[in-house]
Image (cartoon, rainbow, N blue to C red; front, side):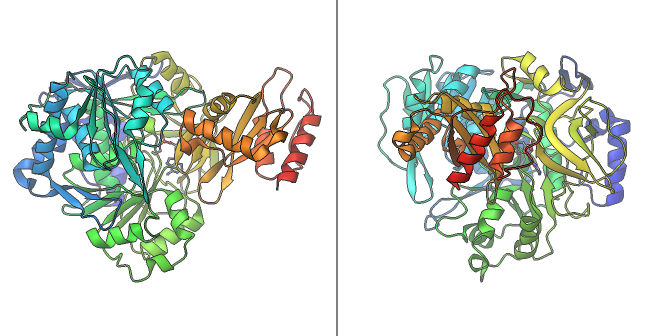
Length: 632
Ligand code: PRX
């Protein structure tokens, strides 16, 4: 299944386009199925209705666990590196992980969970998070992991949207020096979540928590009451595996739905190929399991391939900015997959944190989540890979389930800040604003995909029409990614960033409308408009223009209050980096905010704002420019 040369890539690619069903049917043979499919693919992008491996039966955990027991039972499946470097790391072999998953699956059943139930997981980056995810999959429950940085309100919205029956959480999480409560946040969230019947709480940081009688139970107690035998539930290839909420251009995050069969095949195939994973290698992805990268490339992809996956609880700069490099040295990491924002942040500390660190085990480097600028690419290449480890700049999305456009390690010639070529099975097209395909090379346009792939989303939970409208209606007959892209003279792809109202802050997707809604909840705010601007470390920063008539009384305090409101409503990740109080916003006569102008002002541009003649009140722009200048 592994591509080893450019010729093989070209051959596979050609085959995957000419005969996708045969191609994916063969790839799927590398997985364990209880019953084979009768049809590899049926699809239309109009509804959309996409089915892969129809009729097939499987359980993804048999692929991630059981099938490795025969030959690799004692191989490390998970290495856990805690936040505190003084604390011992933990290794779980495939046998141990299998046992832990089966045991916890029985705990879920004991607490009333059944196939098809939705379960919300809000946990730190500990092995038990992976165990919880896999235990859900084991019994056919649908997991909805919510990143630990989201607020109570965000959790409640997600729990209610999916009508979750259970919540799995921990007392708290260590992030850097201080423990942060998690169970408290869940308690606040659950005030408004009538569907939740049980909460399972893991002890981790040992902060006191209050347990609600009849609802809350301790993980440690529960596992004592069950055994470690749990037959995997037989799932249909198109049964739901998980929901993962992600931001779009509207104020309400969407529950992206992935299903069992196609997702498994795609995550496993892309993991094995893109990183060129070799048996016995240690693979370290620094993402959080709360995001799609963690789902596909910490848990399902690596484990389905029998890999050793490293889970790190902490942050790159604690206790020092050498932390990643210490981990690489300590665990002899061979493959390191991280985000441009982390690279830029570590780069800013200079060479000192790298001194004396043995990074010679590194064979492949990866980047994900946002465009990687050339400076960061070269630093990663030279200082971390010592010019010997290829960088795979992997472009993909929550919705795509797995990597779509990326170099294949040791196969594709890399080029700084280019995601390079589509993986087999992926048919990218660039289109102009009328939806006309732009052919040839040295062109740019909006990035669409014109043929299904097994890992693609099937729907948005509870609202199929929203899925159709968001992804399949802008350019009929194609999946629209929301990204702008160029194709150079060699046919290499470079992603230039979002073309919709979605921001990418430190690799986190945040909708401008979501942030505006949160700001507008603050008493005293009349209206707001949020745009992104280039930020040295985060990639994009958040710039908020806010109409707040009484801000003069104490502008700094008001700003603090507003930031607090955003933290309460969404989470700290959505806090604006800059706030500018204005008396009006540039609107067209029909009342639409002209963000283009605000974006330019946020970038520091004061002239060349483009056509402002359609504005209702062009004088507003001068006022904003003046206010922005005074602020600097
Ligand atoms: O804009 C693209 C950017 O991240 C978006 C997807 O975000 P999310 O669903 O949170 O998934 C992130 C992890 C897969 C895309 O629409 N993006 C992701 N990878 C890259 C990228 N932009 C440029 N280069 C990449 N390698």
